[in-house]
Amino acid sequence: SQTIHQWPATLVQPVGSPLSLECTVEGTSNPNLYWYRQAAGRGLQLLFYSVGIGQISSEVPQNLSASRPQDRQFILSSKKLLLSDSGFYLCAWSSPGGEQFFGPGTRLTVL
Amino acid sequence: QKEVEQDPGPLSVPEGAIVSLNCTYSNSAFQYFMWYRQYSRKGPELLMYTYSSGNKEDGRFTAQVDKSSKYISLFIRDSQPSDSATYLCAMKPNAGNMLTFGGGTRLMVKP
Image 1: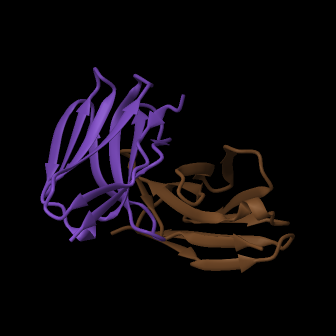
Image 2: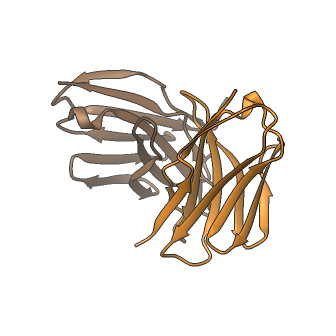
């Protein structure tokens, strides 16, 4: 069966510091991968998606970037965090039928 | 106007009640409809996945799609305190795997 991992689970970072969040998927090959951000009490905002290694599409202009160095690894990065980057970051993969399956999330607080 | 509208709630019901959660949408191209359950500080979990119009039942949960009215529902029978969560609807057209999400409805089932 497929599983999706995210780490760290919780992160507190100062403004201006770098960021690296990692997501890995097991049990499937060549999945579509997604990064979402969820602000408190709000819906999901799609940040990036990837259909293959090295292929990244950005949905929202921001100071975040994403990379896919391996088939089942998706990384979200920033060189300098802003206060507005605080939120709950979710990684997801999609099946051929289109359902998306989410990881446990990373709660980021920027102080 | 958002593509997918969902009442944010909170919706508070007594244990054992029948719960009705709803979404309306504006894009007639949507063909696949999903419901996710999200517990506090957790990733969304896929509950129901339906194609086009009609009903789908899984245990205490029934998903209903009315494409003519652009309206989808999730019914929960015999609601339990463990059903307390935020419920997100999501949908997509035939082509592609990008989901459009509602903002979520927070449900509280009181013992």
